[in-house]
Length: 437
Image 1 (cartoon, one colour):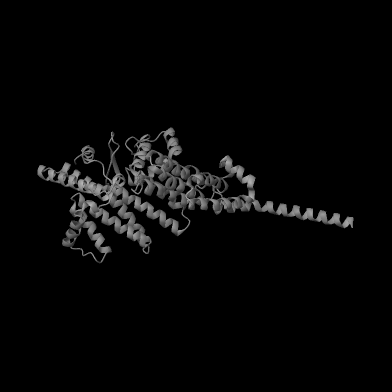
Image 2 (cartoon, one colour):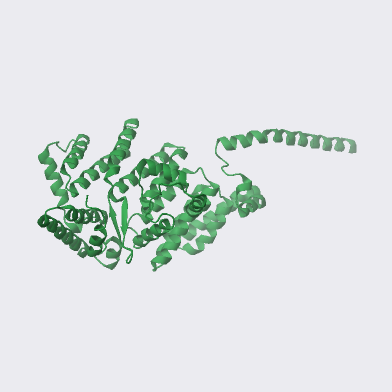
């Protein structure tokens, strides 16, 4: 009986050794497949020490621990315990660093939920900037091939900083401008090659590659890197080759084209050195390039209704932008493009004139901040470039009146801070610095 037991034991040991050897032969194939399927985007030795420790310490139980923390995190979010959620989310990121949604959740909490709890705008900016840094400096360290995280970063610039939904958005724009001016005082990439130190500093500060910045600048430049939409263009463009499904590719493509449309309307900024007030100007030179890009994509994907809608919006914006500056022949050309896409718009000059007249005479109180900025800037610029002094004075008076009506239509102080324009005299002073040709 003892002999039989001993024999069985040695048999089990032998089977175990055979299985161990067999599993060893599969290791190389598993590693190769993980790489081909992008399941391990960062080598273990390149990750942070804390992630390496938790990976070894918890082993296969990491998922169970992370699931338990996620349940607790969801409850905290429902209860509005955002500060407590920060530490919990940090633990989750260390347990599941290669899950992009973990970083998205944490960054959203910092930039959106926590930032608005502070009345001081400087404090809000620190949390917003922290959320962006978390995505680009930590999230992308563990998930460099994640299209999701590239979209998230682009969205932070496009929505949180670029739009006016947050009362502190003007400060965010000023802070971004100051960050860029530390490297490029005028906001533009220099024509000369950047020094190795500058390249490294840009990578450390913004997690951006100057080579890719240069490529975008060569295609759409000169880009003003103080503008949040320029950063949205960068991150959406960088993320597009990484998209592994049609949905994510469509989202990144839409973000990219939206950023180009925004740069057409407000692609350059002037900043008052004393008040830090900012005035945005359009870039007419971008229109033909972006129009061709839209037409190329639509020809390749004719059934994409989102892209088609974006194209029509872009054409309409280009038409109205030309009309604002009195370039009626160019505006008519874009109206005819729009009419071909819309059967309700006859291609006659009379209908074009009626359409433009209706748009350009909207009550200033009904304009968005972007529209009001464009209209006032266009009239001031026309007053500076008009050779007839009487007409020039008329343009300036119209600009002042539109500015006054728009500002008076802000319903309260918060609304005025969030959607208001700079003081009229400051806008005039800044725009006088531009050449009149």
